[in-house]
Image 1: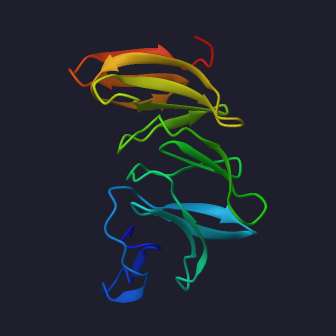
Image 2: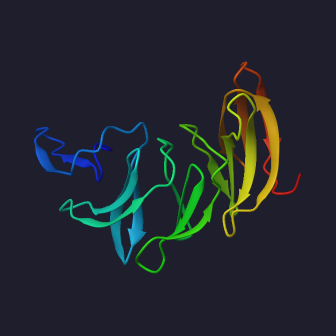
Length: 178
């Protein structure tokens, strides 16, 4: 479970605590299981930190202090962790930030990744939320489309399924060019 800096593991039969991390508040995001140094590990995010944890013991393998407070889910793809307004390369064993946009923010709206591009809602001005297409290799924003204040999206069959804050349903091809 995503509780504290590096999660909490419970016995699925009894509910007893197997291990727990230092408390750092609660997060609205879900942990993800990722490959790291030939093992599956857990990646957790609190408001302030991303932690990669040995899921058997709870030992923290590394922490990364986030630059932005956010509860958005982590997205793992091609040895990279993407969240809110940061992309980290974790291929070398320690996190290395490869992109950060101090003006682009997403509080809790998770995006999707298709063919090396992230599509997600975010804003520079909270009243002008837009879907952004972000190249995960370098952080370039390929395009943005305004949709009002809020929205959500998922992907299926290389299409973006978008619901705007006003309830309008939009289905569009996921393309990195405008």
